[in-house]
Image (cartoon, rainbow, N blue to C red; front, side):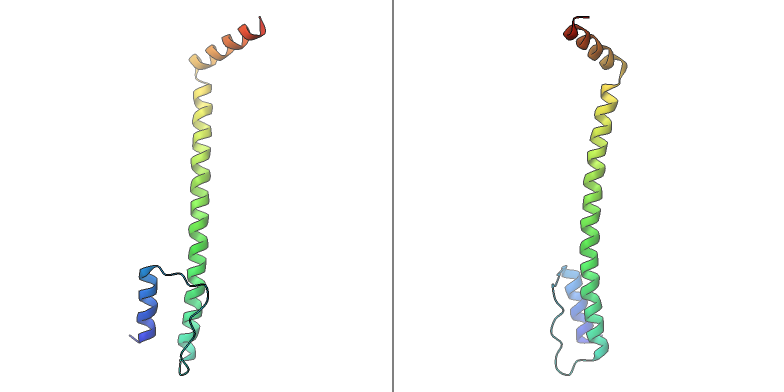
Length: 92
């Protein structure tokens, strides 16, 4: 393995996220420079994907809580109690 491949693997394993690609050494191989740029872009896409997954998870939890509340409210015993309470309030 070349030193730049090892460095990229170490950065990925550590979980480092870079905002800009590292400056290539003066005698850098153009292929390695392109690989570094692609790795930076991939890290950015992975970060966006993680954010999306978090947002979807939060939304799913919110929907689960809402659905559970609705299920609780339409149970026969609870529904009868709510109807009776409403009738008393309205004086029916």
